[in-house]
Amino acid sequence: MLRSYRDDFIKKCRSNDRYCTLVLYCREKDAAAVSDMVLFGVSLVVAGKGGEDRKQKNAAALIEELEHKRSIAAELKLLRLENDSYRSVNILKELIQSEDGALSEATHDFKAKEFNGKCVTLILILASEPALSGAENRLMKMLLKFKYAEFFCLNISADRELLFAVSDKIPYERNLRAFGEKMRRGIRLELGCDSTVLISIPSQNGVDLISAYKKFDMLEESRFFLKEGDVLVDRVAYTQKSSADENVETILMQVYEDIRFREFRKAAEGVKRTVKRIEQEGSMSNIYVRHIFIEILSRLSQNSDVMTTNENMEAAKYILTVPDIWSIEESVVALLEKAEKGKKNSYANDSTIVIDKVIAIIRSEYKNTSLTMEYIAQKVFLSPNYLSAMFRRVKGESINSFIKNYRLERAKELLKNSNIKVKDIASLVGFASDGYFATVFRKAEGISAIEYREQNSKRY
Image (cartoon, rainbow, N blue to C red; front, top):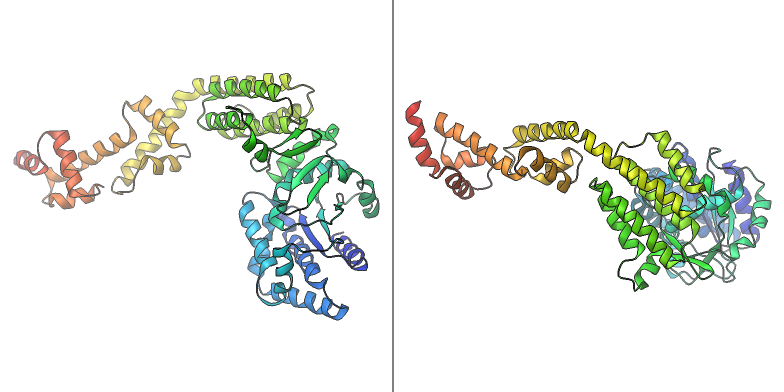
């Protein structure tokens, strides 16, 4: 199927004398196919210049050169957008903008963006599994990824002709024609050049978005869109020009922080403020609003055990299908309140386990001068602020104070039971300098370390 699409596409584009860029997304197990398709996509740009002999020579040279860069090509599996989008972008840029060999043939065109009016960009998406059914759903899935478009140096024609093959189940030719008119209205996306892509969103099929969200892990990465007039515009640009003191974006950032630090009651209040602000602005698209709550749901599932995986999926489907925003608000607030109650019920047990781990880390690594609260928080997978509050609540002192006192106890043992020099003891128990150790010791004991040794060594 992959080869059939590729050959058909190459044939059509070359017969029309068009430059082309081909990008493929699919599952990690299909990484080899991804590499192959992207390499051919880049080769089309190179091979699309000059006579037929030169085209073939350029394409062959390109493939030969890239075969020597297997480590780079293998990393193209990141096009699946599982985690590190910036790394995948850099890989593509290295492939496209390389100054070496055959790739240099394409460099100028990509940098200068001087393609002619016949230029067509095709994004071919083959899901490799029947997670989504119907071409419109696949178009929506593509939308979720389109924030990466500008990074892939996409260009479209002067008359905004953009062709998509959006399904591996529906005949190729019919797909392109069926979406011909829809491409001219709907979402407005800037690609970092003078061209604008217009596509539509068939929101009635929104229930299937959850499959795309889950499959491509887009909850964290997707960019927000909202409706302004008759078109949807980039949420980031809208936020920058908003004159409101507290817009949806700023409220959401606080909600995300509250969830991260497990302040679920505060997060619930933030959700209510978000809904109120959405009503006041009155210009946000249905898909953007639902994306907000899917994002909140995702962060909640990452920071609490309030839901099982199946319950999380059901909640997400509910968000995508329920007809009004108030029902969504009610369900999300209820989940946050449930998480708050669960946090209180399990706090004692959870805290004891965490604090025991923290103390074990301190006891084993107190000699390390780089032992800090931030380091320990990373080891127990909690935020520094949250861990600090938990430790103080359970132990009655800060982590830094506990570390300092533990080091002092170890230092006193060495002062009493060894002849090690005081300055060496300071470094042995983790103090950064003997001067700081002397200051801390005198403040804690009321006497110097030397005096402490003189007074206590007589007993042994």
